[in-house]
Length: 133
Image (cartoon, rainbow, N blue to C red; front, side, top):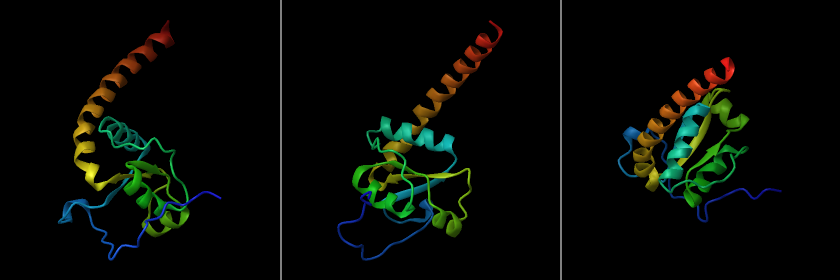
């Protein structure tokens, strides 16, 4: 059976809040996004040295929080319980970012978005070339 990541010690309190409303640096940030957004965040985490290289996690979703705290940014596909309780769409998933890495990941995101925009333009042109050639 797969080892489920856990915290070594239970927290005294857990606070869930929108990122813009927290007063202190969170331990983890849970981002619900579409696969394209997850791709960009994972690339940004890698550029920032905050990625884990772990495969996407499945059930249970909650294991992604301690796993990210211990290892860095990772992807969670979610689980049915989480999807029912939160309303996460079937076209969405999570990227979990360690709070202390958030600034570096956010800064790297601009570079990653620009690189992907340039690559998309190239790929579209190349696709057109291949389909007419």
